[in-house]
Structure formats: structure tokens, C-alpha cells
Length: 316
Image 1 (tube, rainbow, N blue to C red):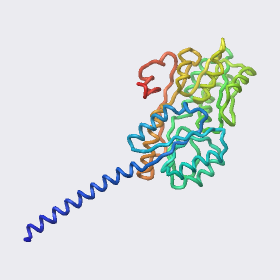
Image 2 (image 1 turned 180 degrees about the vertical axis):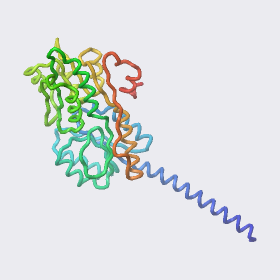
Image 3 (image 1 turned 90 degrees about the vertical axis):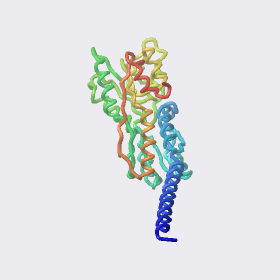
């Protein structure tokens, strides 16, 4: 074989070598994407609360070829039961955890010991893990402040409001309460109801009967829905204001029981959380915090087409 033929053969071999490396890399990347398993662990007694957020997660997971398992743990569960659910997901092969949990000191301490190399993304409510994590959330304090400004304009001629936080271990709910209180005068807030667990309809009725108010304010979907359930049959119910977005809340806004809601873009929050997790799994890190938009909705702008898309993106 002459020198020219040898040179041509070497060039061809090099081309095939790089081509093979490229194909291997492509297949490896594809295989790597398909191998990701993420568990979404949410603490709530109401699964509907998460319906729009779950749609966003599922949409992003499909794009990223991530297999997702949703686990809902009750806020009434003990710390050990909640921890067991998390350990089970990790043992079953979860590469990452998307979490919305109460800030229980014992749980947080144990979580730091359990999660080890598992990637973590927190959604809506933050817990102080020592491990690096990403945090996807609306501006909870500013949402509360915007809602408080609206209510304060209504509090004339001695009218009073009652604020229902419900579970005071949820950092997002506490931040929203603080925002509401910043915007409202102390003389316009008759009482604040905070619990160790989610508030019940019976507790709401008892509190209102003992200390009636003109306006009731819920800081999340669950509380706002329970306010609706507690007063929807009353002939002269107090006006309800809240943070949240479910079909029930919107229905009773249309009926006039709910005056105003502030709703975060839960679909985008879910979508962003899974995309952030994908980045963490691929590169080991991602942005520490990502703020999500929110919207103020009342009877006048409820059926605005842009607002409808914002609140119910998968129905459009």
C-alpha cells in the first residue's frame, strides 16, 4: 500500500472513530435522561390542592424524560411516618426529591441525615436543610401584602378582619400572614387563627361565632376552601379573601361569597421545579431560588381570557 492509500485509510478510520464516539455520546445521553426517577412528596390532606402544580410537573417531566412518582403525606402524620415515606422513595431509586413539607425541626434534622446524595428541589415552602437545594416559589410575603392592601381599603367604619393561617409550621403561610399584617392596620385585625395542623370547618365556625368579623382571610388553598365550606349556606356570610386557586374557590367567587384571591402560577411552579431538578441531576447544581409570578383576581376580572389561561392552563 503506497503512502497516499495509507493516508486515506487513516483519515477514514479517524472519521469512523469520531462518528462512533458521537453516536455513543448521543445514546449515552439518551439513556442517562431516561434513567432519572424523581419523587414528588407533598404534605397535605387535600390532593386537589396540588392538581394544577402536578400538571406542570408532568408536562416538564415528559419533556425531560423523567419518571415521576407523586406521594402525598398527611400533615397529621408523625415525623417518623413522613420520614419513612421519604426513605422508601430513596430506597426505591429516586435520584431527586421535590418537596413541599412543614418546617418541623425534628423532620428537617433527620432529613439531612437521610437524603445524602439525593438532589433536592423545594416548592412553595422552604425548610432549612443544610444540604444544597433549589427553591421554587412565589413571593409569599408580597402576595400577602397585596391581599392585605385590598382588605385594608374595605376596613372602614370600624370593620374588622380575621386571618386564618391554619398550619403555622408552613413557612410560606407564615410569610403570607406577615405580608397581610404589614399592609393592614392593627385596629382592623380582630384575631389571627394559627394551628399545629390544618384548621377544620368546625373550628372556623366556632371562632367566627365567638368573635364575628366582617372579612375572613385564608392564606392558602386549603384554608380558603374551608372558609367557603363553613359559610356558603349562611344568609349573611362574611366576605372571604384568600390566597389560592381551585375550581371551588372560583365558583364561589362567581357567586359572590369570595371577593378577591391572589393566586400563584402553580402550573409554571410545577414545570419549573421539574426542569430545575433536571438541571441538578445533569450538572449537580442549579439556581438557588426562582420566583414565580402571581395574579390578583376578583369578580370583575375573573373571566378575563388571560386570567383564565393563567389559572387553568390545561383546560384552555
